[in-house]
Image 1 (cartoon, rainbow, N blue to C red):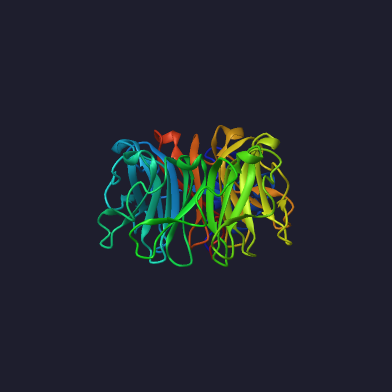
Image 2 (image 1 turned 90 degrees about the vertical axis):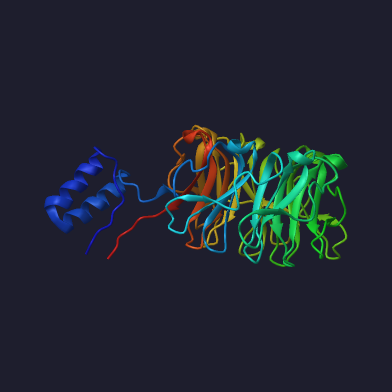
Length: 405
């Protein structure tokens, strides 16, 4: 039998003990040493690895947005500092050893902000963003059928005014929907979708449906196909609110009560659990900007804390929520308590607390614009702006090494 073990730190007691067992003392000793070191916390059983190459973008990569393609490969869209802040998308190559540009670097007409990447049902990648070439209005582009270039879909700059916090998702009808804060309608929330002819964009349920300015808009579809939007609601002191399109598709309605968080909700991230309930992760001002997650209760009348409020070790930012194949919610974030490095936590099996996955602060240095997604292999991937590599894009994934027979 071959034991394929995770490496211990060079020169550490763990490394010395394991090397002695490997070389001279045999299989029984190796098992004993492994059990001893795990019990003593000297041997990591979970770890993070760089995917493809660290700092793979040509220049600084801001507003990193990570998604997994139908081919199972991770793609990252970002504002490309090496290309005049225009949009670039890169993906892991087939060999999994390096990253390659998709459809040409810097493909947007002008600079982009708040870029959001999503895949259509047919596997085509789309990006939505604040478009610097069109007075900061919303634009959406997609990779053409040949996979050689990007094309504008439905016309550039289609929003009423400048937008921020663009969030892109696909509805059950296969059409792209974009949520954003629209300064053209006094900073209120708006959702637009591509019309049936794919020639222009149309408002969904009325423009400016939030009571006041809506910050950090996050869009997701429920299992029954309704669009939901989470945001920091300035009409309720910056607390979290969620609204959904009503059954008639004509207006938006509050879900579980407006302003349900204890205090300001920074960077809310919306996702649906396997049971069909909406969950929102955010940095909670009421809890020292620690990470919190809330979900709609079973009656659908109010929101409840999941695993305790403010569960992270310290202040956080850039929260990104996703559900793993185990059905648990995972949250990746910039961990201010750990030197602004990336960290990830998940709900425990008991559902009463949160646990760190693979060690806190797993990135080499500061990690901003953290973006979490799960691969078809069930592993979580986190993309981010990597300060250890000149602000270029990096992606890491969590692996749990074990015994190979």
